[in-house]
View (spheres, each protein chain N blue to C red):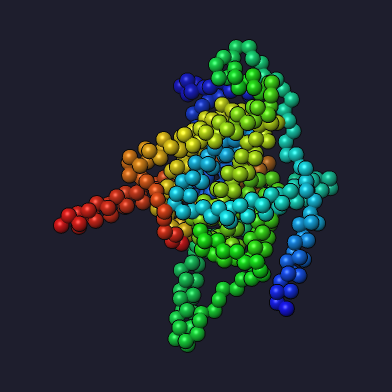
Length: 345
Length: 95
């Protein structure tokens, strides 16, 4: 029945189901627009499961990520979620870090140690980050109460509340969009580190940069999402072009995935409007713990199960985001209707 | 004195990137293949022809097309979302 959706891929020289490509693009678009990530870690295993030729998988994915991130970044910018100054700095730091990470991996490869070290580092990072973000979410009210108590005590004593510890080595840079003033060296160091991790692990790095922007730089969550997408746009463009030159982009597949991703990204970005920062962090934590489980399954040889876990996690998370968007939208409409009635009376 | 120490610290920190080695790490090799143009027509034929004849042109077309198609779909979806009342504007950031 679904054979009617088969389309000929001229570069891969095979038929492939267009509906699968649009659906993969759509789910990755929703996740990308909502979390500020590229989504390659979902696309590659998903394409693998459905028999897409792997020679073209990464290049085709990067091509569609570029198109999708233009859509998502433009919309986040409209919402005031893109700190372009911070985004440009992140690109500079990340590029240097990625190259160092890649060199380190090449050195480890020569020693025959790359495989297990990279995989275990990846698992440690995903599980560690996910668990930390869950802990952050679980203790947010307790920490907010403690901070309020400290501020109240300071006010009673007639002194300023204790300043948050920070590394204030000049030059200090102010990022008006994020509302933070931070040392240039802190920002550069953080992005060097996240870039190094990306290059070392061989990943795009969106899922590393987003929490780094929140926890190490101090960005509000929605701005971390939008700013991260801004960086993904540049890495996507670079990846699209370089893989295009290497002949590794199946253009028809990329267009089909982009159609789904562009629609999905609009939905994902709009959903950010209806969910508070900590809600986004909670969903992100769940997402990367599931991704870590997939990596663990792959490490122990369960490749097919690993791919299914990541795909089901992506689809499930997509559904959650769309439900939250729908509920938020209905609540907003009900509020508007009630206000209109009140104004009418 | 503080200004001098700041300048000194900055010089020290600026020397760090100078010790780094740029990698020319090629993450994937170029695929050496030619697409069979027989039985292809229309846009598929054009894509395959560019792919065979000029990889740089193919890469530029892919990149431009991805950007253009993405923006076009975004525009259309924006209009549809606006029609159903799901418009976005600047938001307040609540954690």
